[in-house]
Every structure is written in structure tokens, then in C-alpha cells.
Image 1 (cartoon, rainbow, N blue to C red):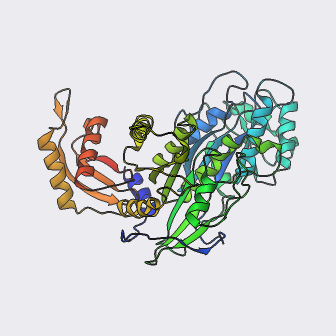
Image 2 (image 1 turned 60 degrees about the horizontal axis):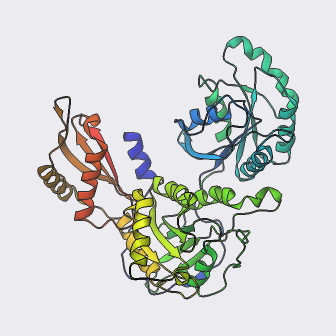
Length: 473
């Protein structure tokens, strides 16, 4: 727990801002000059099918995220996670295999792997020590030559010391020294990560720590570019009915009348040249993750005409897990035929589909008519204020004790949870440590109850809050 709190304290520094109303945006600068902190670097795991990429991915990610099955080609989509090694955090991509021939999903998997390689700072090529070099391994290696990225060669399935003497044939791939690993046993992965972090770019500190950074995320063609133009009041980016037309993401800076500076992280683009980037929706996940990483607040844009899709819930989950502020923006509301309860029913559907985002405000807008767009700046200010809100320990403990009096702590096998003390340890998002007799007795449902009581006492509009149970020593 102490390590988690340390990450919260260092990753989410205190930004002191006042929640004054933002009257309108004034463009100050139109391109990102590189002064802001870089997003987490990305590590891509590639290789032909059935060499154990998903097993290695799960080991590094620390949980079973990717499907592991002894069938070639079972991993059909890139799967994303966040890893950490020696204090350095990074994005992790598990790709489908790359193989010659016309086998099912091979072209799609090849495209996804090439996109992952384009997005990654470092690439890990996984081969099998049991099977030796195959034509498919050489094919993958040729693709990697074109990436101009650092490539680490991991020879997997080396489960005993005797097999280590057989890995040197992989030198012939021309990718440097092979590293023997065993994904199933977790052996050798530390050596791979040691080598990977040597190639990660150095972080750049923010010049302006008071900058409020926000991004618009969502499926292609939900109207992100149109919303950006409407907010700015100018044709800042190309708008088209064709999904994925914007090629380059450009950050835009604004200053409010009271001097508060904002940075809009444009995620509308997301595609580069080549046929490989035709799968815009899948490719946009990686760019959206980078934008989320750099943002304070995320505007989740939905298309009122199309409703809610699985992709919407998938990408919103990344922002929620990252502890970012959230605003749900329903665009193209002007195109919907209205009845008495149309808005209320749509809002109810959003709450049902995004139950984990119960704290996020919902605003129905139209980029075309600029309907309710004036609410977005005000909401951004409110969410920013909530993210940075600090509660004194005395008031927080009064809230906790009142909650316990209202709903006594649970028992398990005759042992009752005891709460001794609570204190806030971080902001962005607000995080609270509750000292208890036994951490295991803090059931999820009771932690949610305490969180709701804290929310009733203070308006944490648009931000998740974290409740951490810790055993009192």
C-alpha cells in the first residue's frame, strides 16, 4: 500500500486552482512545442503465433489480461496494460502473431502488430527456443528492420539450463544478443525489462504546473474535430464525414479571462500513412491511451445518433482506471427527434452502461448548433476543483464515524472490521487511507458505502476517489 500511495503522491501533484467561471477560450498557441511531460513510453511484444507472447505479457502486467491458449492465432486484437520496472511506468501492448501465408486473421494480426511497432519506443520480439528459427521468425525480423526502433530478442520456453546453450542460433536473425526467458516460470523477464528501460526516453518536466490539460476521446466520427472547432470558434482542424480523416494530433492552448491556462490534447487524428492504418478504431485505442495519460480531465464523446458501443465503454475504462477527471459529452444532440423524456432516458442508459462513471457529469451538446457548449468550460473548472480538493483529517474522520454509526462495519467469521483513523494522502484523484484492524475485512461494498458518504459531504464532481484500507501498525 505504501508504494501505491507514493505513486499517487508523485504522479498526481497538488495543483492549486480556483473554480472561477471560464467565460470563453482565447487561443494562445496552436502547436505543441514539446514543453509538456511526455506520456508513458510504450513496449510492444511481437512475434509469430504460439511463441508465448501473451504469457509474457501477463507476467509483465502482473495479471491474466490476455487470453492464453495453446492454439496459434488465438490473440486476435492488441491488448493493452500498464507495466512498471525499477520505478519506470510504461504502456504494454500484446499483439497477435505475424506469419506468412493466408491463414485466418493473419493479415489483420500483421497490421495490428505493425501499428504497435510504429507506436512503440521499444519492441520485444519473442521466438521459441523449443522450435528454433522458423521462416516466420525471419519474416517478422525483416519487418522489424524497417521500424528503426530498439529490438530486444527474447527466446521463450527455455525452461531448463540445458536449453540455454541452444539459443545462440538466434544470433543469425541479426537482432543482437538473444535473452533466454521462460514466460510460464517468469525467468529472464527482468533481463528483458532491464534492457528495455535503457531505451525509454527521458521525461520532461512541465514548464507550467498550473495548466489544466484535457482531451476528447471516443470512437472515430463521433464529432471530436467538430467539437474542437466549435469550442475554438475557428476551423482549427479538418472536419469530414469520413471516419479517421484527421491525420495528426495537435495540442491547442487557451487562456481564460481570469488567466487560467488550458491545453486541449487533440486525439481526433491518430492515423499515419500506409494501408496498415485503415483499422482506425483499433488504432485509435493506442493514441487515446497516450492522450489520457497526458490529460487531467477526459471528455468522453458519444454520438447521439449511434448510441453507446462496446468501444465507448472500453476506452472510458482506461480513463477511469487512470484516475482522470471525466465528463461525458453526448454530441449531435440536435439530430435526435425529441419527446418528453428523450434526454432523461438517454441519460438513464448512460448511467446503466457506465455504472463505474456515476461521478461523471453528462452534457448533451451539438457542435453544429453550439447547443450547450458554454457548459463545457464551466464543467472543466468544476472538475478541476474537485480533483484538487483536500479535506482536513478532523472533518474526514467525523464523516467516517457518522457513516459507521449509520451503517455498522461488517463482520467476517466472527471478526468485526474496526476503523481507527482516516486521512487524505493525495489529489488528482483524491485518495484516502483508512487505518483498520484487518485490511481483508474491508469489503468492497462497505468501501463503496464510505466513498458515497464522503461524496455526499463534499462535491467531488467528475473525479474518481480512491479509498485505501491499511492495517494499523
